[in-house]
Image (cartoon, rainbow, N blue to C red; front, top):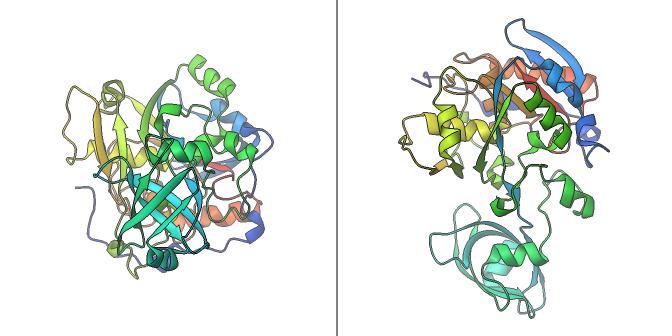
Length: 359
């Protein structure tokens, strides 16, 4: 049984974060970010830099990472009357490839107009408004096969809302992991725990006897959405598509392997797969993870976690809190204690911020 009966209130996920600690740009070098290490066995906390990671890890880990690539999902356009529109591609629907779920800004005005586009590039028709605030949009594309190809050609990276500046050329490199696969451009947010790795650091981990295994989870906007219900249990969890190769599945199903997950996106895919919700087959698996990991949760396949510092009031606070105290209810309180020390030590928070290793 993964969950016991437990009630938590959303206000328990809040903590004080000075605005100046929200990282607006990446560090000059990926592995020069800071690294806070928390050991659950000794309940000890120490401060390092990310390039020290190989010296801090237990031996012979199976390291799981998300190789998804971030799509340039933000499109500009105009309504028939001339007003500007910003369209954020989220994911294709089950309908033809040219129909996607999107966010529109301004939403109501654009929905009322019914159409928007960019001359010689695309035209778009709004065919449904959803209760979630999303819109189903059908694109007509004179030059491209599908909206993702269009976006990759003329769109911009969708930086998180707390990065208060437009995306630039630096972001095109640094808001992708060094191991992101170009054929997996399906995310609208980066798996940010992986942003700290360099090719040299990954090579060192392999030399040290660790093995590295890829999975693909298409990170959606739900990762930024706060819990808005009074009780955490009532929050409707978003679903994210993931893919596992047969090789990665074999690692996950081997209970003798000690596993380090690079980021909460990996945790969601791993735990969903190892639950009874996905049938184990000798072939690649595609599924949707809508598992809401919160205290008290018993983890099935993650032994250690590398993650960034997360937004107050977010579902990721629940996940990391659950990992700090598996099967117990005190993890979120412990996480807030750790975050308070990180604030005192002037760690940088969120996507372009520093990292935390939980052993």
